[in-house]
Amino acid sequence: MNKYDIPTLRKEELSDLAEHIADTYFPDTLVCPHKLAKIYGISSSFEDYGDAFDGLLEFKEGKFHIYVNSKRVKHIYQARVRFTMAHEIGHYIIDEHRNPLMKGLAPSHSSFSNFSSDNEVELEADFFASSLLLPASRLKKEIHKKKFSFTLIEALSAKFQTSVTATLLKFASIGNHPIMIVCMINSRIKWFKYSHDFPFKYIETMPGFKVPEFSSAGQYFYENGIKNVDSSEIVFAEDWFRIRNKEDVRRQFYEHCIYSDKNKFVMSIIWEK
Image (cartoon, rainbow, N blue to C red; front, side, top):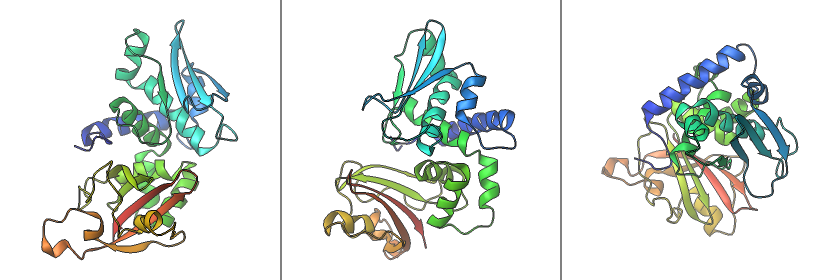
């Protein structure tokens, strides 16, 4: 079991719940988490809270309130803020998250929009948020008979006003093409997630270990910041994955990287050629 992901059955439950809410309140428009918070009677504030959190759901004096950090964003309708709001609403909607808060059995939920938590509650809220903003049936309609590419992810991200990471997270769960997403910081693997039908479940070095040298991401970390910004590079199964069968060694995959020099961060999206 990948500690940075949740079971498939739980994903289906959360996806159905999120889609029901999306279809009930926003049947013909983009889901607006700010409006949804008001519908549920949840107040919110948008202020600079430093580096304390991206979002926080608090239950106090019989009411729920969402705090959204404005430090790294410009306005409340940015994709990052939309996701943060949807994530905190997820904590409110999901019974197993809301009830302990109301009974004083759990602390206020603070979160960061970096998908790097291995806490089950945060993983569930992340998946709920991506499912709320990208309802499964609407996403499936958009990708029907379309060949997978990173350009497709960018187009979906623009249409649903979601971050590329949130779009990838949801696509991996219901998409028409198996993919793996790997997050790396300072040449170390932070986490990875994959479609249930992706052909390899184990990368050659597990979370906490070094990025594989011959991957596209490896070029950035080990060859003075070399980037492949506008193209998807061909890599081989042996470059990334634990190989059990000899015939898999030279299987070809595409790898597309997203970079952040400031954070020495790379995210690789990998799919079979």
